[in-house]
Image (cartoon, rainbow, N blue to C red; front, side, top):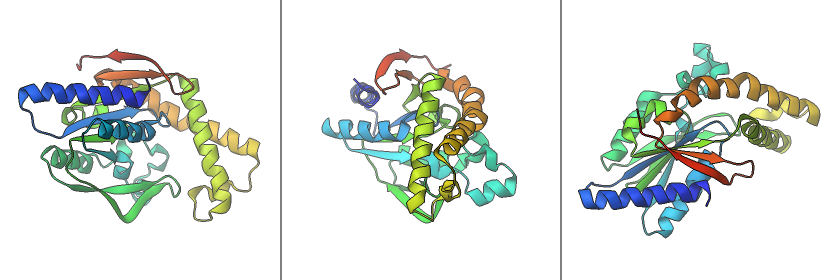
Length: 241
């Protein structure tokens, strides 16, 4: 069983519990954890599993609620992108409230290629049986608006490897895309790019994980512990406190 299957099982269990309590849809499931933990991939796979079970499912990625780079720069917090203060939390919560009420919402889209919110672009989340919400800091921002929160967890060195692999792929892709945010790395050697990726992890993402994400892990209902190959090593259940 992979993380997506664990989350799909949580959805089905929640739906069965609601059926006996006459609780209206939708079911909101949060998927959170570190940068590069596989939140978006897991959300997409879980959505497919949920649809196979006969329920409708939508995926909301909260990266779109990051403040645009221009605002981060204006506030002097560009290097804190991904930290709690870099998110428009009020807009994120308002979107979740509307979804819980059964409404449609259009949320901003974020591009990992341009490393910014896409101006004028948006993704519409339509009323569904289940909405999977993936993103950073959900146990801090919106645990009260989510029916179940799953935290994807892995050892720091494993997370670092996943992050470096993802960033190196973006560096490589920039060679054929002058519009990429990462075009500045095209002239660097592979060793230099690797060193830069490890620096970004150690000086930014690891700090965010240790100081701002892991302290809230206990607020998740389910902690899914992952191996280096993304398989599930174990599942821990918490009582929100």
